[in-house]
Every structure is written in C-alpha cells, then in structure tokens.
Length: 99
Image 1: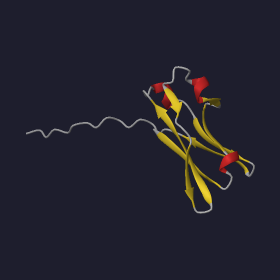
Image 2 (image 1 turned 135 degrees about the vertical axis):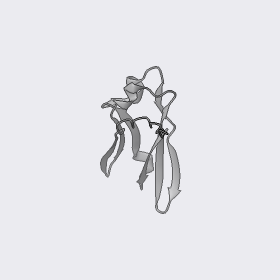
Image 3 (image 1 turned 90 degrees about the vertical axis):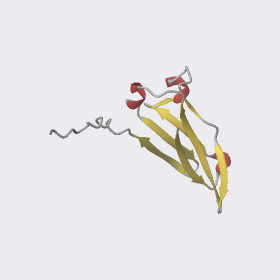
Image 4 (image 1 turned 90 degrees about the horizontal axis):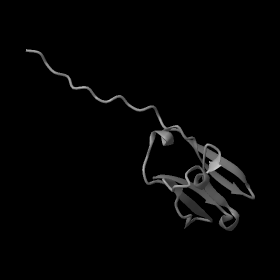
C-alpha cells in the first residue's frame, strides 16, 4: 500500500487520484490487481487532509516498471508526485571463514 495525501481548503471540489503510466489505475489494471482505496478526509486546522491509498493485491515486475503518479486537482491548481521504485538490492551473500 502506498498513500498519497494533500491538504485542501476546498475538499468538496478537490480531486485526488492515482495514475499508472498516465492512465487511470482501473484502466491499467482491469483485473483489480492494483486499485485505489476510498478517499479519506480528516479535518486539520482550516483545511482538510485528503488521502487515497494505492493498493496492491499482488506485486509484480510489471509494477516495478510502472510510473505511478498521485494527482491533486482543485480550483487552486494542479500538483503531481511520481513514485519511483529504486533498483532491486542484491541478495546478501554469506561470508565463510576458511580455516
């Protein structure tokens, strides 16, 4: 699960959603292997924190190559954040002492 959060003073007209390689998640993964969670709202100060999770029922090599983007769109403007996976770490090797 990956979360995306944004603070908005206009939550009723603010959209928060995920894209995968520039496409809507449900179009990219019609099987539901990757899908968006419910939009959650939590009052904070004079605004509202919006949160939407990106959920993986299984994680594959295809997902490592997918550019996931969180998008926030409101009358105030547009903002995006990209999720980039780091290269896989090599497996640790055992060191044995000779003797």
